Length: 214
Image 1 (cartoon, helix red, strand yellow):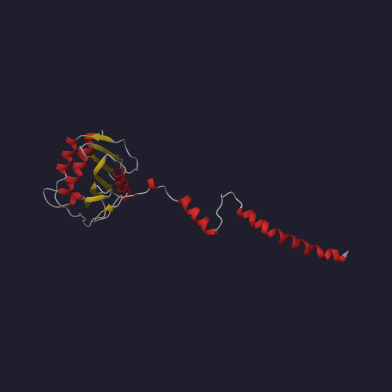
Image 2: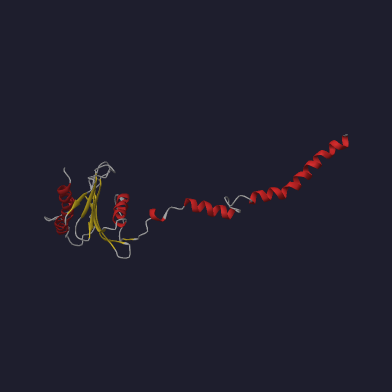
């Protein structure tokens, strides 16, 4: 009896060794639902986490400068232009003031000179309902924005509203050119009787007031 009891563990181990090939086969017979190797599993993981192509920015932004304020809003402006088949050009004025700002204005233009304006309410990310404009309105805006090649205005001040004016054009190759980018720190401080920086701000305010009830 003692000898039989001593043999029991050995019999159990022998049975386990005999079942090992069958266990290996069951891991491979999985109807193709699971990868058969760690490398394949990693590839499947990557495929599941891949962002759909339609959700990616498939265009390049050709810009000699960089966003000084409201970088995320500027990217949203670019996306509005690039994801639409109707728009080919855009004008925008962004503002920032630490605790307060004057909102963000984005003007998207069609080939015929008409288009749509979108305004982000001050101190929020709330996008107000867009309004359509005519070619005549856009022509008036463009005349007001003819201020020559301005450099950034950066006086040594530590308070006040900052602005950034951006003009962009969609290229035929599907990319985006930033034609004008002017950063203005408290433009009212610019010297001279004719202040081109304030002229830009006033042009956007006038355009916006034509289409939005204040």
